[in-house]
Length: 186
Length: 88
Image (cartoon, rainbow over all chains, first blue to last red; front, side, top):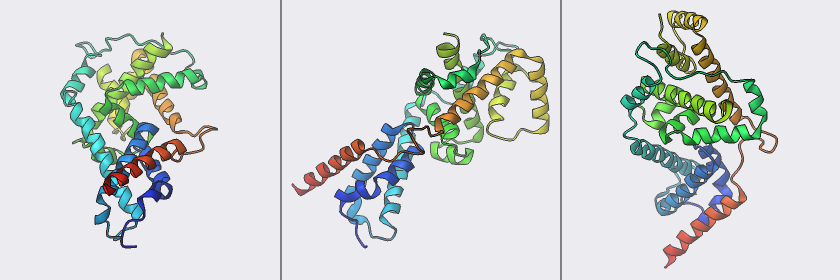
């Protein structure tokens, strides 16, 4: 085929594949759906240029990949004030001048039981959503989607793995704190 | 001797990279003597386990779901709208 197929059939032909790909990287189904829609609309505009060099699906996935990168780039721009220096500073605030914890660390009673409680998962999801966008993106890609450090640094345009580690540490620390305050020690 | 701050950092990094022998030694020693960090360690592990479980398909959700019918219709309409605009 040397040209794109009828766009009216795209959702039926490619919707699932694009959605599943997007869901691997996006925070939730709503975001993944947005990415799929943006991809199809961009492909619509560009369909004259589709020469059939690759399969139509490959072409669409390529557009989707760019949309995803743009999405993360936008989050990064919005968070320009939350750079590595300020993250390191925030980390520092959890400790006193001798390097000891300056916040209370309360034990959690039978934490595994929380997993059986539907309310817990709502609180956990809310804690993730409460993170600044770029930290949430990072945490989700690393812990939930299981991407490697290299893939993540590339996708989120994080310049060094060291920066990524500082960000992840901050994200994990905040999530722990959030669960502590909103579930285990209400 | 590692500080609690350094320990907290290493505990997080341990989840993403292999620690050196001396880092691991320092870490284990600090955790042995510091109840606060030991507590933090357990809680970080719990957060990580919880995140992994989010990935686990439950009974209603066998694996990664396909595009929902509602979303599919919505997106098809958006495509049709754009196509109709072009015809004008």
